[in-house]
Image (cartoon, rainbow, N blue to C red; front, side):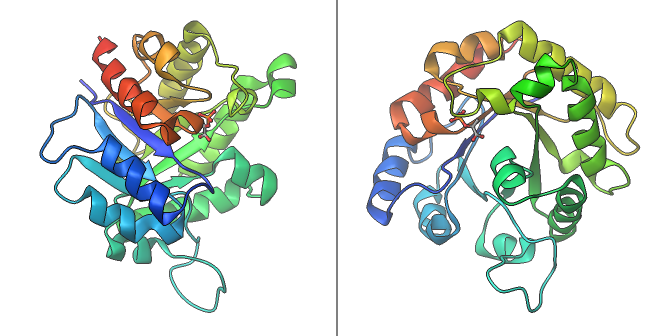
Length: 250
Ligand code: PEP
């Protein structure tokens, strides 16, 4: 059985004080959690988060990395730097990166190659917009983003896929458990066609307005292996309840 993963994407939020408070509320020294749990703060808060998570079962990731290994790339942070700092995870291809920073499928693929090469565990995001869903193109878009990122890569068993319908991110709208399950089953079937991917063991997370109130129903679906959580991950109580809801996995 795939162990659930719940990951908080803190986006561009927080101060050193709020990061400390949030992590003190989320973590308990030595506690075993029912899922793998990770938080992804902004780059400048990574070191502090890593220190606060030491000795707990919460791990830390970044929200992005460079597609280059090293060099004259002002403002960029490499996957190797993140690993060296102690990060385990990196989120790649988030819809906000695609939308506001023009990240193409090719760039996401290059970032994925850099992350895998460095030894990070990448969480590759994909999902359709409302217009694409209404036009009946959701599967086509997700398949293009999935294959665009993963095809031809080595080390794919380390990869986590996150299905995040763009229309559900930060909007309060959530895909119904059935809608989400359908797309997750589709993604898992597509993984079966990608050389080196293992659909039986690779985790597929759902993201898009996940909160304590809807998490158990989503996690009750057979192909939903956890969640990538934005807004609700900034509230320790909500986030912990989402983690606890992974107990609904069958
Ligand atoms: C996200 O940004 O990955 C996300 C899922 O955000 P939210 O939970 O706020 O919709």
